View 1 (cartoon, rainbow, N blue to C red):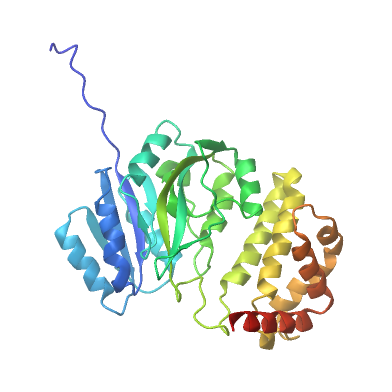
View 2 (cartoon, rainbow, N blue to C red):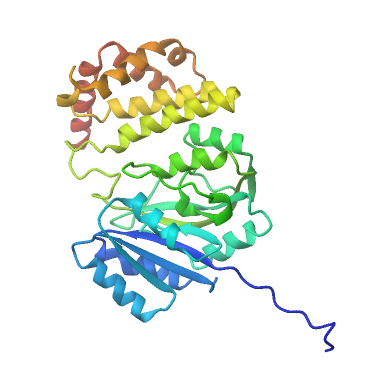
Length: 340
C-alpha cells in the first residue's frame, strides 16, 4: 500500500470514570471489576477514597497495584460531591463518567456511550438502568428504558425530570469535559446530580437516551439516600425541596411554559418531605418545616387544578395543608400496620 493510500487509525480518546469511595470494602471489588471488563480499553479508573476508616483505602491501593489504569486519590471525608469534584480536577480524560462504588456496569457501557456521543459533544448521552436489592431482587424503576434511541431537547428532558420520569443521575451518562466546563457538583448536599443537571441543561443541545440497560444500581440500606431506621430523617428530603425551588426559578426564567409542571414538582417534593419527617420535628421552632407548609397553603389552587398530580397526591396535599401533624400521625400508623 502506498503512502497516499495508508490511513492512520484515529486516536481513541481517554474516558475517565470517577468512583467516590467511602467505607465500601465489601462491594468495591465488584464495582471495579465491572469497569476493568469494559470493552472500551482507553479507560482511566479514578478511585477517590473519601476518608474511609474500614480498610477500603488500602483495598483501593491494592487494586491499583494490579492495574495501571487505576489511580487512587486519598482525601479527608467531605462527601460524594467533594470526592467527585476532586476526581474531575485530577482526571486526564476528554470524557467523564461517574459510578457509585456499590453499583456495577455492563461490559460494553462506555463503548456504547462513546459511540453515541462521538460528533455530539454538546449533548449528554445516557444508558438505561435497573435497581437490585441486597437479596438480588430486581426493584421497580421510575426510569423507563426507551425501545429505540431517543433524543430529548433540554426543555423536553427537564419536563421528564419534573414529572419524575427522567433520569438525572450522572452515573448513567457520559459527558465531555468541555461541556462540563467549570461547573461542579454542589458539596454538602444530597441529590447533587439533579442540581448540576439543571445548570448543564441550560447549555447542552439535548440528551440522547440509548435503548439499553447498562447500569445496575445496588439498593443498599444505610447508603446516603436510604434510611436504616424508621425514625431516621435523611436530609435528602430537604435537599429535594431546595432543588425544586431551583427548578421553579429556572422555568420562570427560561422555560415559562413549564411553570405548572415545576409547581407540581415543588408540591410533590414537599409532600414527600412531610410524609417522612418525624412527627417530633413538626414544631414551630422548625423553620424549614413551617416554610414547607406555607408553600402548600399558597398553592392550594395549583394543587386542585394540576393535571400532573394524581387524585391521591391531591388528597394528601390538601389534608397536609389543613392539618399536617394529624395527617402525619395517621400516615405513620398506616405504614406501621402495613408492615405487620
